[in-house]
Length: 78
Image 1: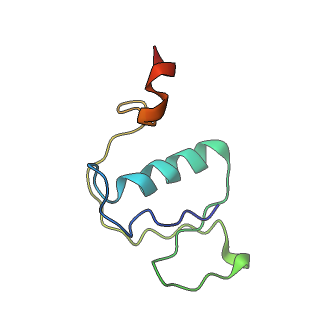
Image 2: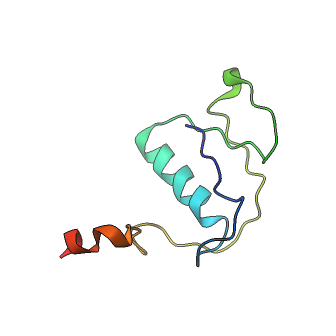
C-alpha cells in the first residue's frame, strides 16, 4: 500500500502525522506491505513494505480511542 496526500494539506483538525500513524498500525495488523516515502521521494517497487519513519513523533490516538468516520455516514452509526 502506498498512502498519498496524508501530509500535503492542512485540512483537518487532527495532527498531520495521525493519518500515517493509523495507517502503519492498520497495515501491520492486516499484514499489508506499506511504503512510506517522503513527499517527492522516488519509490522503487522492490522496496515496497520497507517502512522508514521520517515524520516526527507527535501524539496521536488510535481508531479504537478516536473512531474516524465520514459525517455523511453518521446516520449509519445509530
